[in-house]
Length: 128
Image (cartoon, rainbow, N blue to C red):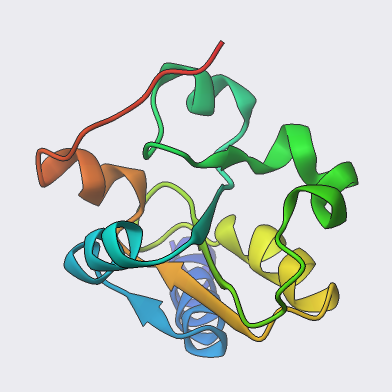
């Protein structure tokens, strides 16, 4: 039981550390950004999840990570938003880190993830 608690505590700590590395964007903030500027969404939930449903316009990071430099805009100040499943999910970090390593300076994290987007009743797209 102590090991289980220690693992849960370590995961919670890791999630809080990861979340602190990239600024958070809320669902409302994301909707505003989507309507007022060019934005790139990176869905880090995996291809099967992306096919089942993703935020409109989001790229399947798993499928595109090897060509990420070619699909991201040339402007290194462009808004890049990475997301995964929910506030406890750290998978977004791979997408955010990849964008940052390519020199992007405005990388944010949709902490609510796809679960929060769905719960808010927002529009979803399905992939093929």
